[in-house]
Amino acid sequence: MVSKGKSKRLYLIPVLTKSLDILELLQTENQPMVLETIHRRTRISKTTVYRILKTLVHRGYVAQTSDRQYRHIARPKKLRFGFGSQSAEMPFSEAVAASLRSAATAVGIDLIVLDNRYDADTAKENAETFIRERVDVIIEFQIDEHAAPIIADKIAEARIPLIAVDIPHPHAVYFGVDNYRVGREAGGLLADYAINHWGGKMDWIIGLDIEEAGPLVQSRITGAFEGVRARLPSLPVESFVRIDGRGMRDRSYKVILEFLNRHPKDKHILIAAANDTSAMGAIAAVRELKRERSVAVVGQDCLDEMLAEMQRPGSPAIASIFHEVGLYGTRLIDIGLALLRGETVAPYNYVEHRAITADRAWTLQQKEAIAAESVNSPLVRPESTSSIAKPKSKATPAKRRAKAVK
Image (cartoon, rainbow, N blue to C red; front, side, top):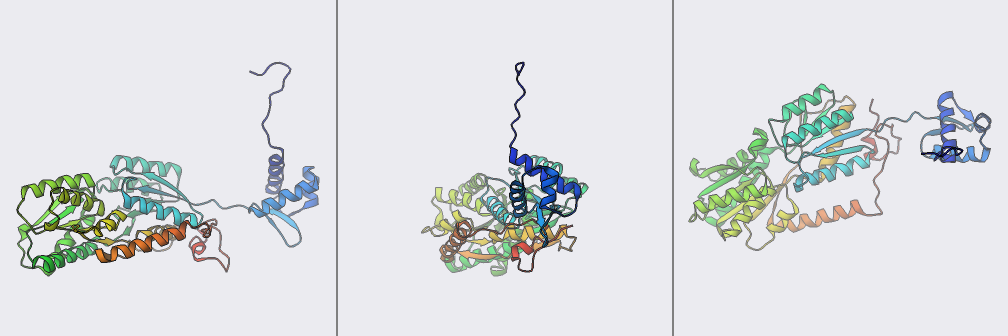
């Protein structure tokens, strides 16, 4: 409580107050003014006016004309993108988030990241948060196909462009891998392994699926089965088994452990996992039962852990399909900006993929490490600019991607 006789203390910064006085004058007049006029109207010393104006010009709030007049610049609103990350506990999801953060920083976009926690209800709540925040674009990475239409409808009603990562959503542009083709690639590798190491014999081909993700993501396993059949056409249909591993390590460990315990004498088992997290769970079960020579596993995503596992002597991990996750961020930002500019964007946008086998795993790890060092080097700074400012003729490619959005 303020005692009598003492005025209430105001915590004001004099130079900031003067800066705002000058800026507000230029805003109100809305026309170029010379330093002398600004000095006379604000009654601030010429030296202070001069220094404040130079600072405001440097920061882009004020422009100085060739005849030494100053005018206020109407600064465009900085774009904000919302990213609903699949789960902070999923390495591939975190790699996508890191790629997006880097790409957004490079073009001056504010990126809001919320964790969907591999949970449909959380994903719905996060989508509602993005809508309340009025972000310019929403990039959704959530696993549940049943939640997808609910989330997408809310976003469409709010008239916010939506990009869906890896799992399709209604009203959304799709971005991710061609699930069937990466599956076929994995299946071909497994079949070749059976031919080269087991003389073409095979007792089981297990597809570690993600049922809740829906048909498109499940086509990874469909493709894997077709890849095996293409090289081993005489295999009986009952040898092909789909098991829901949910894309999770613990779940995949449990279901593979149970399967192997039910078939203790089978020595030719191929496993196509929907992702590397699931593959690592399966490998843990195989190793616990000392069945490494009886099983071959191929995953998806090329996580660092999987690359290291492939180099381990006697590992059942024979390959993983690389989805070029480092390029996700740039491609997603480009698509988002194109949507805001009203350009026609293809409904399905696929990333490149390639198989990484044990003999190529170390090479990929080296390349990824070098790329990470380049990004994090203090000598390399991403260009930052307003995402809706018109680029100059010498603008960098990163800046051009963020050209005028109206």
